[in-house]
Amino acid sequence: MKLIFISIGLLAFAVAGIAVKLIFKKNGEFAGTCASNNPLLNKEGESCGICGARPDEKCKENN
Image (cartoon, rainbow, N blue to C red; front, side):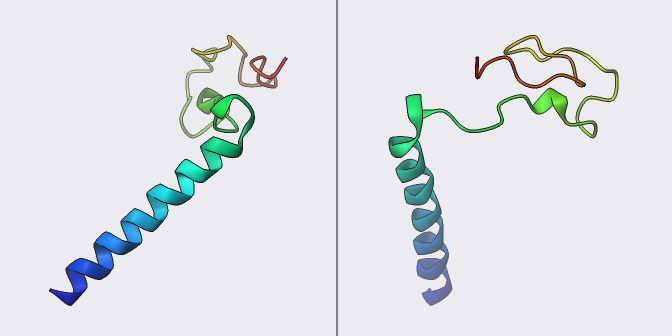
């Protein structure tokens, strides 16, 4: 039972940390939204679905 409470407490702490980060970030956005720029996730070389940047370009969403 003690382990369950510790686990729930750690999860609550992590969620609270993410919430605080979103509150203080500009426009409440996560940094680095172009996951398709990661070569491990984008093996075909497709453009970003959010901003249209190719894997060799920087994210256009910040502009």
